[in-house]
Structures are given as C-alpha cells and as structure tokens.
Image 1 (cartoon, rainbow, N blue to C red):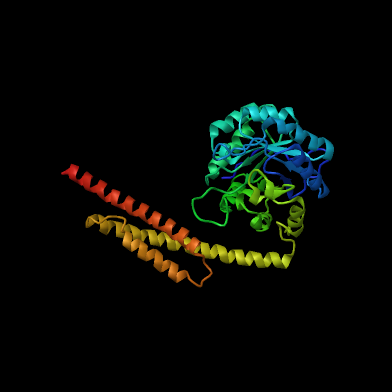
Image 2: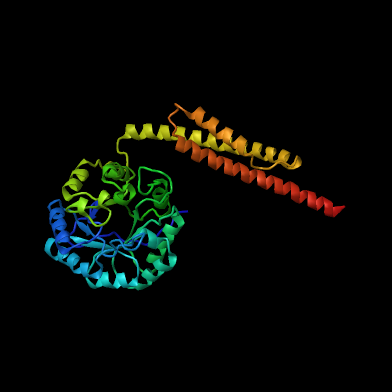
Length: 373
C-alpha cells in the first residue's frame, strides 16, 4: 500500500533546482583552499548544490574522520562568495546544531545512521520546528522498511522537504561495485512513497570513477530526481575515497553525456504498441503465477510422501542437481546466472515452506487422532 506523506517541493529563492538536481563537492572538506578552489570550478558549470563531508564516519579509527566544525565556516564562505547552496552529513544532535548555526542549507543522514532508529529519532527531535530539507540515505543493509521508517521519523518532526538518497547496499560478494545498487529497492521505495524524490549517489555505489556514468544514466532512466557526485579539485590527492572522486571538469563531461528521457509517452502509436506489449507481459505473468502455484502443490505432495516415509525435507544432493540443471537449461536464453540463482533459490525456499507446512499438518492430525482414541 502506498504511503502518502505531506511533502513540499524542495526549492530556494533564486536557485534553479530543476531535474536532475546535481549535488557535487568533495567527499571531505580537507582545507579551506581545497573547498574554495573546488567550489570555484563547480560554479563555472552552474552546479547548484555544494556538498562536503565535515564529519566523516569511518570504518576504523586512526583514519581521516573529517576536519570537524572548523570546516563549517568554509561552507558558509562558499555560499556567500559563489551563491551555491551547501549540504553536509549529520550523524548526531551536535552535528545538527553546528550545521544550522553556520547556515547549511541541506543536511543528509548517512547510511550507518539510517540503520539506527534511535539515532534517527534523536536527529528528528532536534529538527522539530526547523524548516530545512533533509535527505536520507538508504541503510547499509537492504531493508526498505528501515529506510521508510527513517523518512517517517523525520516527517513526523514536521520536516516537509525530504528526499531519499540511494547509495547502494553493503555486500560480502565480489562485485564491480563498492555497494550493490540493487535497483529494485529504491524502485520499491518509489512505489511505497510515490511523492518522495530519490537522489542517486553513484560515487558510493561505484567506489571508482570508471562506472559513474553508467550508474548515473541508469538512475535517470529510472526517472529518479538527481545525482550526488563526489568532486574534488585534485581527486588522486583526496584524504578519503580518492578513487571514486572526479574533477569538476570530468563531472561536467559526465553530465553533458546524460540522456534525459521522458517518463510519459506522447506518441499515440508508440503508446498503443507499449500497451500491447504490456498486455503480453500481464498474460505471461498470470501464467507464471499459475505455474508456480501448481509447482507448490506438487511440493506439498512430495512433503506428504517424505513425512509418511520419515525422509528429511532438505536433500542437498537433489537441490544441487536441480540448481545446476536449471543453470544449464537457461544458457543461451538471455537469462543471467545471477537471475536464475535468485529465482530458483526463492522457489526452493517457498517449496520448503510448503513441505514444512504440510508435514506439520499431518503431524497435528496424527496427534489429534491419537488423543481421540
């Protein structure tokens, strides 16, 4: 069920925040010179929002954790000299008060903080009565409900200008990405909270500058609302996340290549063609559901035989054989191994659930019959 939040358009007097909203600046504010030089270059390309980390939550101590509050006057100077909006991350109440004191225009809540409802609630309480846009990154783990919960906590504090930031999700898997994009999760967020803007953070998804354009374009193709891209005057010398930062000129080049497509179809012929194809999709999906239902009925029959013959539900060799065969059958049909594995692991788990349920039912009936004797 969709959640309708009373949200307001994020806007500022005299600043054009048209789609896509672009937020750019260094991962960390390192020195006043670095902050100002980066801002001067970004101003040339009409970037509306300057982002910079003041406090940097790092995985391990004894690494650069930001300059702290002394960097806030630098952001204030960016605003005064270049007319850019400023944005930074806050992780606790002290950060909120300091950022507000120095006139930061937008604050965002980081992935680690979003994962902690207590921390989000404390930040929400500190924002009661304040009119400032708050952007909320997805939690590090793939949990849409936790993400929505953070949005609701901030909204309940009276904040009307809210956006979500999709920065990818942590994984132990080997991957091209630093954080897996798992696009289905921000898509689900968009379905659940339709009027919530979504900004993509390609820098943290990619972890390297080579993939930034691909992820940025994908975000635009999904009709998301903006991008937050880490940009440094000298990326290779950055004190944090050097590999994922780009120069202002490289950012401008990336943005100039983006293709912005329309979310709605205006051509009547094309609309008719799409409707026919969507009808085919609906028909195939109906068949899929019927086939899956039939498969689960067969699984329940298997469960009955296993129960009556005292056989375990899970038979690892059979499962391994089934999975390898499905991968082999899918070869050459345009289906990735990753997709087939996800689908059949989900089907297998549902089959186990059905077998467990039917075996429990048989056991319960046997106990009832025993009591009746």
